[in-house]
Amino acid sequence: MPKTTSQTYYIYTDGGARGNPGPAAIGVLICDEEGHPIQEHSDYIGEATNNVAEYCALIAALELAKQLDLKGSKIQVCMDSELVCRQLNGEYRIKSPELRKLYQAVKEAETDFESLKYEHVPRTHPSIRRVDRLLNLKLDQCS
Image (cartoon, rainbow, N blue to C red; front, top):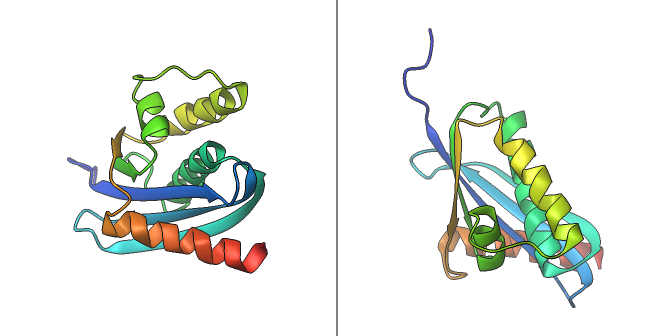
């Protein structure tokens, strides 16, 4: 039976480095339309800047969404990185070649979904605090 309307999933991401650059990690939370968590993920990514870590978190989240068979769905991405959010929304130019490469990887991954929207949310948002805890736990384990 074909879908008549696709569900919206919410992805919360955070990336951080201790030092800039420094040891870095990512945190991801994917929730269904009602806000129920369906997947959490964290990973240590080695030495990186905060901005690189933010992009890496988003790329990992989109890969995870594909693995969860959310292709063709509407995705609302919430992140506390104003820079990355505004770059993805076309409001800021991307000057760094490294960030431009990561931006392209995100844009290529977008094609697997019906739509993607990027929203900047405050660090105090409960789900952003949750992914921040995930990445900091991973940094504690790995650095």
